[in-house]
Length: 225
Image 1 (cartoon, helix red, strand yellow):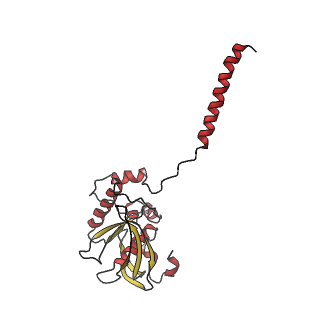
Image 2 (cartoon, rainbow, N blue to C red):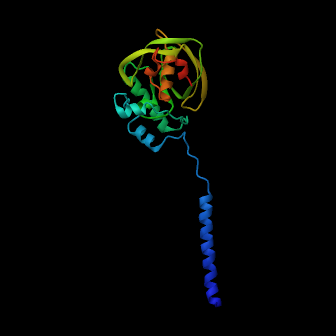
């Protein structure tokens, strides 16, 4: 073997070895964790397909595709005051809700976004304001069970029923600015049924509809996580 051949062979071997080593190193890199709190590109497209005050289509059970989507459990989202897309979703949900003229609550899954976001009219507060809640969850139920008369839903038009609910609930939630809060919500009859609204809207986040809670349909306690 000539010296000239060795001079050409050694660099080639080193190049091949180095290339293979780079491939191994690249394969060895752990995959990046999926940020499940971030809105997906598909969700962003849907949210941005309209100005802040443009209403969104409310899904209804008489549409087969809608009915399937309403049964999907939603995911949490990152509350961030600098997230302009999340802010637009919240505002569009608000305008969608008030455009109904009679709605007192709306959950993101009802407008095709499976995220833990709801709007609730606070009938228990002065002025009965509409408020937005991010990642709400019920952490405690009262001992008093009640049958709520006339439970209804924007996604189930022209229907209502008597549902098994609780007189008050303790909830945890985030605000759009990222602050975390806890409070006890009361009210289940007359002009103040705020507790029922929260129970109804948080049910939506878990793919549960009001007729799943109809009085006498099944053991209500078995339906509570």
